[in-house]
Image 1 (spheres, helix red, strand yellow):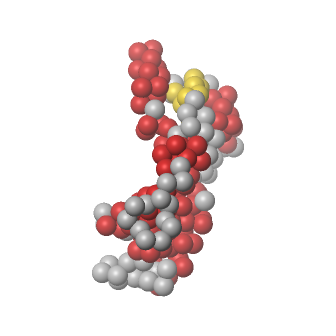
Image 2 (image 1 turned 90 degrees about the vertical axis):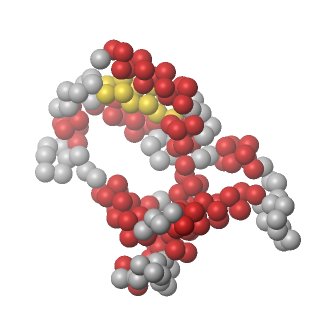
Length: 175
């Protein structure tokens, strides 16, 4: 998904291979990248509950509230002054992170971690699926894994504060 978001920024004519003017950044590409990201943070059921098929009252043509919301989220990131090159760099760093780089193999590296760890999966998270979190829990010798049931997607770790908070408090009390 991150590569598709970067491509949206690269396709903006103002990108100019990253040599854009600070006064004229590729804000349309950044807005589309942010809109795409918003779709991975939440789930279809969450969007359906929040918006359904309701139409935006401020438009004369047929525009759904979810479209207005996504456009506003896309525009907001630019208004806040977020730099498109920073977006590209951060997503590349996240995509290229490799715990085994310069070390032993992935499993061996994780098995060597002695720190206790709390791994919390959100049942509907498509960015960090339960299967990957469960794998971490198996490989980290001092890890405990919990699954929070939620239709909120990746944002569940923010929106399910009571459930996540209980897990974090319980974990910290054990330390």
